Image (cartoon, rainbow, N blue to C red; front, side):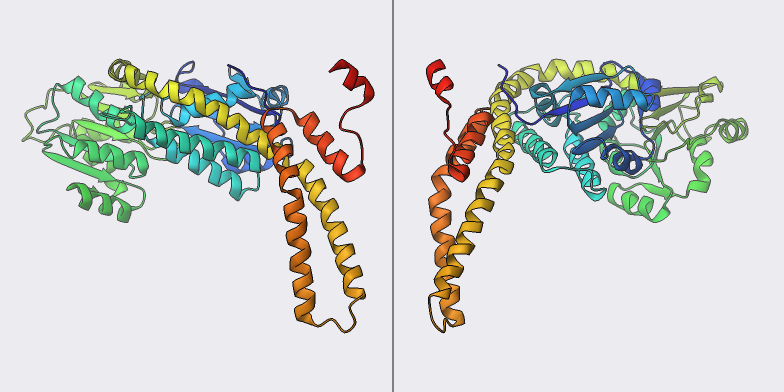
Length: 429
């Protein structure tokens, strides 16, 4: 069912559904704040969501305008949504239904972060703030009502699952985690239960690597020892937030030529597995050319996603039923907010009358002291508020139903004495 949305909102972007890792990298905006600062000149509000498998722009504005703007930025191959379709997408996204790993929880934090960055740059609007927060609330509620997030529920845990499938078992293996941000922590936590021989953790900031290593019982190593510890590992999972390549071809090849596997490992004939789940990518695109090295990216996690979806399809169907009702509430909330401008005119009109009549009354009271003035001011405010309560409810009710025309007519009838309906409209009705 489609509902009438009074405030235009739109979304455009690409995701893992239609794009591979190269296309996502090409579409990505390297400087988020710079993009938001520029885009806010064209829209009332802008939120940019960039994760390892999606880049999406949400705006308070028309879809056609967003489409033209992105084309002017050299972007192509994206899909565009508008109105209620945007709201429905946001609900599904926050609920984990649209994620590569169905039910994953990280999208909640990613939406909050995207909203925060938008607010910091002054690019957000009250409508987009409402949209993101409503979607996050619905996402949390879906996870409470269903078991959609049971099991491997992140790209990080899916990367560990892929490594386990490739090797048969991770027991007794040496594994290096590069990057200790949110994704790195998820990877390390998933690995902690695998009975590894050794887990190494490295990061640009060594102290951060130490903190994570202490939590999961691993060994923190400095970034300048990266290639040495890669050579000691069976699997490397890289997930930094660096805007550039972290693991390079030449130093890796040189290190592997000198020292490939520790003498004590029983897996010395196995290939070195590198799993890159960073966006943009951490691993040099030429590294797969090194003999005995296999590189996997987010694209390779889709098989994990498909099996994951099979086990959660019923939970997703339960979530869809809940979201269908939430979409209706979502539209009502935004439409209700659309009445604020009309109500602002109403309250401005009422306030001007209140102040004028208050001052007239005070002028008639000889030697009115501060206490008398305060009482009269409070009294006039209460009277105005009570008189406008029913009118406010009527205006908001019209807006919630998508009938802004009658909402505005109600305000004009009160503030200017205009008839709610013209004689012609009376006849038509």
